[in-house]
Amino acid sequence: MGFFPVDAEKLRLPAVSTARSAEQIALVEAYCQRADALSEPIRAPPLFNDTWTWNLGTVEPTVAGPKRPQDRVPLAAG
Image (tube, rainbow, N blue to C red; front, side, top):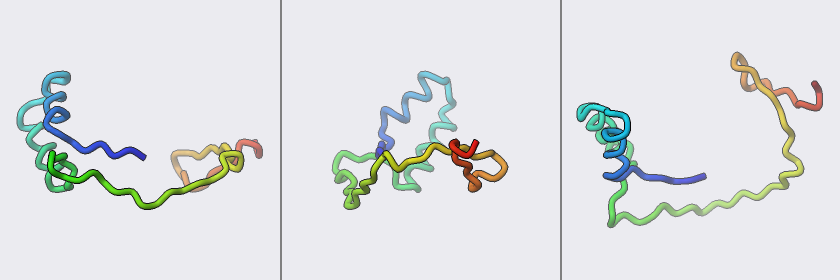
């Protein structure tokens, strides 16, 4: 999992690369402020306390359809 907070440069890029309007960028900035997703220089980096470990050999490839994604079907059953 990665944590990539939004900073001033990330807010500037859509205006330059996709010609987004100032209103659209202001809306994204307001959302990020409300979601506490803006990066501030004095803010401490996030602290991740939990580590998960598992054997990748036990991971089984499966498929799931768009209608019922919770009904996974193992590829071996195919």
